[in-house]
Amino acid sequence: ILNVEQSPQSLHVQEGDSTNFTCSFPSSNFYALHWYRWETAKSPEALFVMTLNGDEKKKGRISATLNTKEGYSYLYIKGSQPEDSATYLCAFRPGGYNKLIFGAGTRLAVHP
Amino acid sequence: DAGVIQSPRHEVTEMGQEVTLRCKPISGHDYLFWYRQTMMRGLELLIYFNNNVPIDDSGMPEDRFSAKMPNASFSTLKIQPSEPRDSAVYFCASSLHGGGAYNEQFFGPGTRLTVL
Image 1 (cartoon, rainbow over the protein chains, first blue to last red):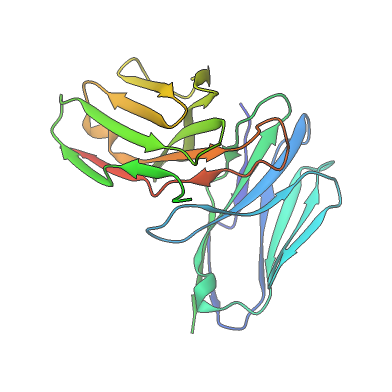
Image 2: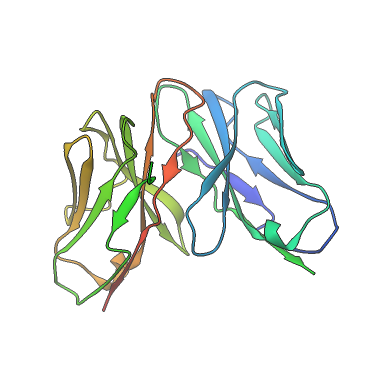
């Protein structure tokens, strides 16, 4: 069974705070790691797809890093805004399969 | 493109009834995925298709669930007979060229199913 763990489960921050959360995944048979942003009552939307150890991706105030040898990825949000409130999902894609195994997500609430 | 289209958006039915969920993937995408989202188990993959052929149905809970993809632009997920524990949001997603690592999945709006 392939386990993808995310922590924390939920997070409440004030507007302007920077925050980060973690995704842990199997370090063997790694192919790709996806991050999705999921707003309430909407569909998950892809943020990043990462494949190389040491990879860093950035989109505006959101960035992510990847360590495939130890099996973790961090997602960072700089200067959180209320519109960043969402559930952030990571998903592990093992080699040989075109399927994603999702973590349970980190639910972020940014308070004005 | 309109994105992935799912219907109905909401379905309320009684235990024992047949339920059919529908999905139209993004035109040109060759992979289609059915997911179920519950509070207890999060987002779970039920089944996925490549070029209309089911590739992995290991996530399908039991024989009451079946999925078909008769052509590249349409797929159904059927539950017969439905049970209250099937209540969940069912998402369909599609992606392009599954062999590449950068094949992000595009999700539909989901169907919220309630079985009474």
